[in-house]
Image (cartoon, rainbow, N blue to C red; front, side):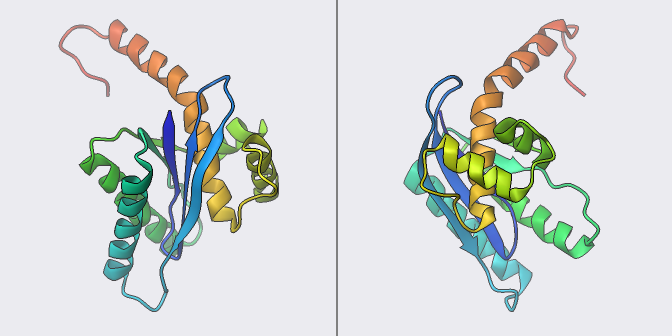
Length: 177
């Protein structure tokens, strides 16, 4: 499975593509950061992020997109920018009919390091180790994007089975809440 991981942000939006399957070696296909200037108007910044994500989707042809789930932060302005960039990533994937998965930061940290409380240094080190890289990708947004892709590769099959089991238990004609 090939997954594009997106660590959303208006100034720095991490993107990383990983090939792999549970129980098999992982391989980094590409990693980078889409950057926009804080001097630009927000609508223009979102267009630049959209173009960047579309270019990554065109070049790498992932089968799924994993985006960091926006969580409440103290700085509302930061959360808004993160949510807007996240929405752009989901929109780009949805236009192509690609499945989108949202993963919380603690879920990603736990999948990659074994601890949902790992710090950025630990995540970067484990990403480098799992992908057999010489060192952690820089900046941390790039490593986080790869961690999202890894998390999705490892968790998607189990999540799929749970969804199918829940659907089988629902009475006919009803949908999930």
